Length: 269
Image (cartoon, rainbow, N blue to C red):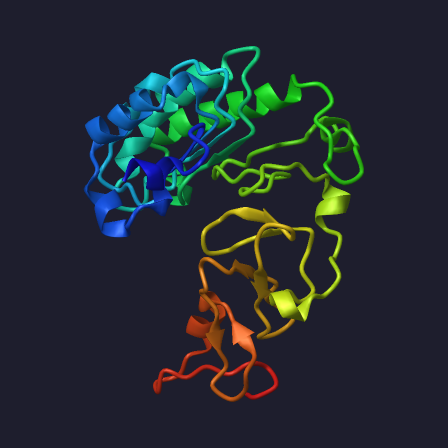
């Protein structure tokens, strides 16, 4: 199964490519053994989606890494949020390095733990502050479209990550950067790709990842003008209006659902 994780590029480890049941059985010692096998100091991208059985200690081989560019910690979902502190310990050692290559971090949904004001909440907020400081110290972080320095165009109050661990300006797939102006640019409609009125960089409301138009097909909630959510093709979380073929996000469907488990868009109500 190592070939499924590493593919042809052994500097990119994606455990999301494993069968979901197998990924869920992996423990920290399993992940650590794989990291050591592939020589952790040379790993650029690590995605741990579906590895819900780990506690974060498996990241020890990555301590102080200068090569790591991207890490997906979405394994720490609702049932495994306790894995974050150990993960933050390693991430701190990486962002503290002056020559760190880190470009993108994907956290799970940490809104509840941040609002709880617990010790874990303080640790997360402290790390996010350090992470934003790391970005502000970097010179010439250029938009991949217009070559504008994002730190300059964003002003003194620029934040690369908000308090809920959501990173801005960066595509979660290719890790290219986009300034605010280019990110909000509407790409040409391409029905053959399933894209309709998509921004150059759009945020999936379900998996909480930003994707550029070149990497992921995004669908927009069509229920009404009050909702503007995108859902990526991987999540496929859109529901169909009970009266027509318009698509709506799960939030809108639940808000509009009647006793017969049906929901209608503005045009069909």
